[in-house]
Image (cartoon, rainbow, N blue to C red):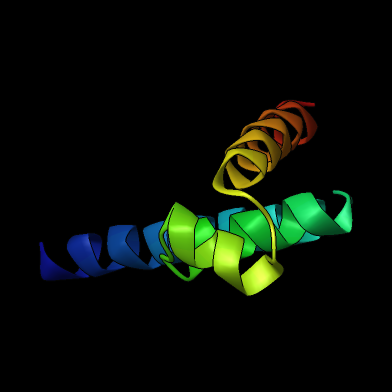
Length: 79
């Protein structure tokens, strides 16, 4: 029984690693601002305000770029 659980856990880790690699690959296809906004806000867990300060953008621009980037990323992954 434990072997079966370990195999399933290993499969899940491999699937997750593949998923993360797919996200990172497709992130590179985004415009630089969208990519950086997603990296900072989603991967590094910065707030919108922190991202805006880091990139010298308004908070609204960060929100817009985040929305556009996530939509594009979703479309790229969905293909």
